[in-house]
Image (cartoon, rainbow, N blue to C red; front, side):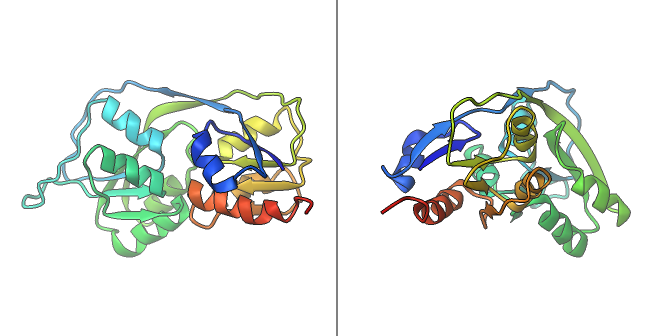
Length: 229
């Protein structure tokens, strides 16, 4: 089976799971540019990161969370996705709560953290779920754009049996110049899957954990059924 991943991935990591019966190709459909912003105080604010790029841009701008839990100025960190959590750990910071997507995170915050004030470090095309839901519950929320996402609108000439998407913006970039006439379509999570549904009535296979490893296992399971014995 020939599958197109709409993101540059570690080929070894992919091949370990999919093995030789899959032929994988990789295409970057978006470009990321970090934005330099003026510094400002973070004291007494809870921080939200919904992507790895948001984490990287945060630290490139010289910000640093306060983790002195004995005082009153520390920052609780919330995030979306395992990779975002792992990237925060790489910089030496733990996460108070991780959820699979922004919808689940907003629901958790509304139910358990309504007294906190939040700063969301994100990209210019970030979904506005948090921005819409939290202020409606009188929860302090500030969105800070620290990177820009550019859609590259590539044209794919080669034919593939399957395609895998990793973000709503990636879906929009791809469908501008390509149709979704594939035997199988995969999405890393429900939010990305919802964007795919806007462009096709075909069944979409969606990863349960918004995580690459889970997505690869799903591709291995479902894609193997399409391979002639």
